[in-house]
Length: 263
Ligand code: ADP
Ligand code: MG
Image (cartoon, rainbow, N blue to C red; front, top):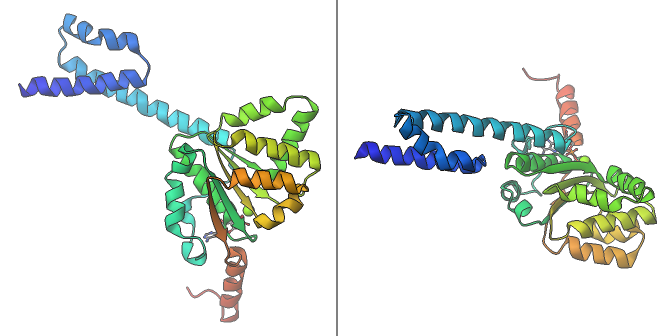
């Protein structure tokens, strides 16, 4: 009786593996084949283990592929972020975002604040967590994205580039606002955001408050329309603290003046 129950349990797991691995022919026949060979229940135990190993290996490869495709310039872990040094950014809000619901819901995350306050670090950390959750992620700087779109425009393949980006569940755009762009660049970026609106998630960092965006885009009406879409379902994290780099160098200088590192 209990042996039968155990057998059922193993077969339930095997069925789930075979469905996940898209092996319908095997799913239909494996029980019959095991019976014919007189290998019950040993064959089931072996098969379950082998299939679990295959799934684990595929998951691992997919993760490595997606991590490479994300093109993160460096790996930054959220765990390595010192939230005490940046009190304007609540850890609970970052943790909520890291859980990935905003990616599934095709929402927007805007990290805004002064240089050196950890925006890129959090952007990279959120991107990494999204990759780990199985999402397809792409990191790109705003300048590189606009350049790519401008080149595509000349070659009449903007729709193709937008389609390529649409394949990513999350596009993480760094440093919007540092480099001003042309009217054409602004229009293309507008097209990019419109294309993703409510279809795919986007996260971005910027040093500019929303009130400064019309200046960056050079077109009041377009910027109003853009902000309307971007901020419709949007999580804004304001980084108001001081630069982490300055804080560190001041701490180093401080240690220097009192006779070096106490160790
Ligand atoms: P921003 O993008 O806002 O200019 P960065 O994310 O590039 O700032 O941060 C500058 C450097 O300082 C990076 O190496 C980053 O990892 C580090 N850093 C910034 N804030 C923190 C923090 N609160 N805890 C740990 N490291 C931080
Ligand atoms: Mg940055």
